[in-house]
Amino acid sequence: MARFDDFLDRITMYRLTLWLLAGLLGVAATLSIFGALPFVLSDLLISIAALVIVCVGVNALCSRLFSVPANPESAYITALILALLLSPAPITRAGALANMGWYFLVGSTAMASKYLIAFRRSHIFNPAAFGVAIGGIASGRWASWWVGTPVLLLFVAAAGFLIVRKTRRADMVFSFLVAAFAAVAYGAFVSNGLPMQAVQALALRTALVFFATVMLTEPATAPAALPLRIAYGIAAGILFSPYFSIFGVSGLPEFALLASNAIFYFAAGKQRYRMTLVRAEQYAPDIFEFSFTADRLPAFAPGQYLEWTIGHEHSDARGVRRYFTIASAPEERDIKLCARFPEHGSSFKQELRALAPGGILFAGQRAGDFVLPKDTAKKLAFCAGGIGITPFRSMVKHMLMAGEQRDAVLLYSNTRAADIVYQDVWDEAARKFGMKTVHTLTDTKAIPNDWRGRRGFIDANLITEEISDWRERIFYISGPHSFVISMERALEAMGVARAHIKTDFFPGYA
Image: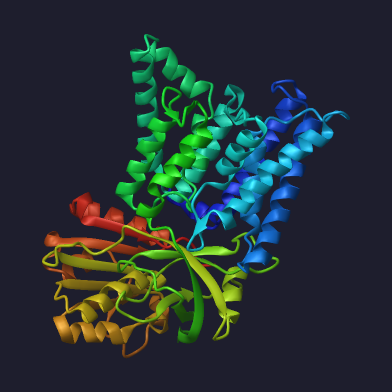
């Protein structure tokens, strides 16, 4: 699974979702040729083309009108989701205008909702669900959610697994499924039905899996904090039940999702910020730090992250959005982002590197459970691999500025000595509250002659030799996925309780 996760790590969540939706439609197109679906191939292709044109066009128009960067992937994703929800209508001469009007109504409403139904630059509702709900109310033609047909179940489940694995939202999906099955079984029981038959129908004859893995987990409208994710899944599961009505309407998944979006929007802290670059500094041969001011400074806990957006043409497979940990402390006036820039990096990294002071980008979806314990008496051990040092810079700087006297040890692994960053912060922490920092270099052929640190990877021997009371500490691990996995295995082999291991993996460096 580590190699599998490394593969997923090279693809953005948006690009992965786009490819998987296109794959599902490709499977559906093939099945329609053999008569396994209740529509013909030409009608499916026309519906896809119409929805793509409408969604991409309206997205571009709204982007210009509201002066915010457009994310073409988002428009394509919404269009393909709608194509899987709206039954392809037979395009006859008599009904062509009405069918095209329906596609336009649903697609344009979905995309416009991202800009018009928003608070502090963050949209409240899942665009596809909003589009089909308003389209149904306005026209009386409701989405069939034909993607839930049993013949597609295995393909949808496979695609959903990849999305959930990438987004790490298995807890949300699991809580939703438990709540949905329980609500359906209970509803069938109290209405003198057969609970087991109702559960089977829910699993095989609805878009349950697609709803849970693709729609529910959308990062822009779903909460990110663990307790809220679980509560969100439970609420959506109950509302998904056909025995539960919303404003007198039941059995429509879009209303269950929209109601869940509305209930949890403000609790989830979904806001978007306009960031202005103040300065960029080179900290290592290929590592740069960027300092931004914001129209409204985001409230965050040390160790949390933001999703950063730079709109640019001809984006590569990594897209126009990326998640980066906030490197600054909440007490600092600037928001800092620190990243590695390889020679042939992504188009996103190239745009970020070329950003001049005064340049604008957007950030939002503040989230992350990789935060300090509330009990300041807890002993901590920070294990950082390369640029995974950024959350620890935020944490340690916060300790210094807030005057927190925490007992912490930092184990910091780099390939070369030149890659070490923020040494001034570690030195100040050593002076102020005695934090011990242990550096180790993994490229043993490029170690300087005057090197006084460790050599090799962080392993059980290094931990036990440098941290005598390691059994009493909570371990925080941040870095490349392979680093996080190897550290987890080493600590578990040493007998460290899983509850004392907190992980934060950095999703991509290219």
